[in-house]
Length: 364
Ligand SMILES: NC(=O)c1ccc[n+]([C@@H]2O[C@H](COP(=O)([O-])OP(=O)(O)OC[C@H]3O[C@@H](n4cnc5c(N)ncnc54)[C@H](OP(=O)(O)O)[C@@H]3O)[C@@H](O)[C@H]2O)c1
Image 1: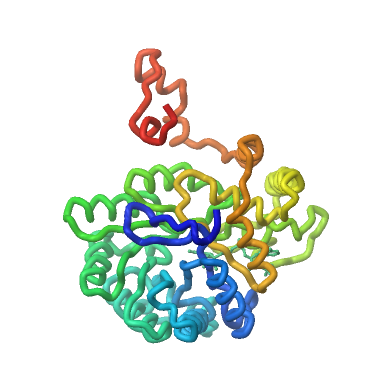
Image 2 (image 1 turned 180 degrees about the horizontal axis):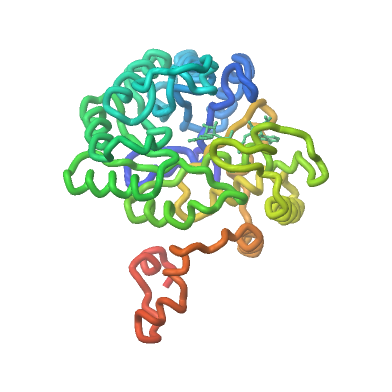
């Protein structure tokens, strides 16, 4: 597999690379890359055959979008690049924008029609383009009716301002409801889900992955290296404060847990067998998981990117996948119990019944 081993994203005609270049690191900020480093990363990704670039309006207060727009213009690659950006976090107060605190404008965030139009207008300007290929709702705001989101984004598809839309960081039912409304109304629906997914973050397998499969959405893992934890550069005995990884963050607690260190031990073993870096094995694992359409890679330097891109050519053996799956197996919850053999036997009078999902996936 290489970056030019293209596939469609979900049940759509959008053709993308198996690794998508994440640009949260582009621009000033605690984890940022300056313009020269960001350009080198962008160009190296493109030279390796990659066509899929992901940014967001709030990354580095809009500087990430400006860099991406500039690099695309410099390389005259607008027709070749699948350009994705996001709306949703507040543009007036978010810590990621660098804007100071205080009371912000509630209309500068969320998924209401007013903010979506405001955000898109600003992103198009910063990106120096007149359309977005894939427009992400960055985060569920918890209040806007799904009907309004589908209406607003579908209208933007019809207006030609965006080609497709998709959802990031939302409950599975929100994406499923949007997909159902869209297909019933014969209007454009979401084509993908962007979710935290890695060897140390697999809880989305329970509700999100089945919903994505059912609705024809590709899953795009973000932080497949758990923000750097799965590179193996941190040690169990290490207690240094990395901020993003060692402490609580808006999406969860510290990655430095006994369970995660044990998963990392198995990853190191597998990587040693393959004579590769743990980061490459962790990315290859994510890419090989059923339902994953394209995996986001984040890099702060050219050397990190080059190493990570090599994951696209790495193949994990069945035994290696099984060991990694077992070491990182999420704790089963209520939904998982519904699919258990014991429950199925109770439903089908002791018989095994093979459903269409398994038949069509060639598992039966
Ligand atoms: N939708 C969302 O809510 C959401 C959230 C987060 C990210 N994202 C997207 O997903 C992309 C990737 O996320 P992420 O940056 O968290 O991914 P990640 O791959 O889990 O972490 C990337 C970070 O790990 C470190 N790293 C990467 N490769 C390395 C290597 N080979 N050796 C050592 N360190 C390495 C670097 O940080 P250091 O050098 O600082 O250690 C790098 O910035 C983002 O750019 C963004 O586009 C989306």
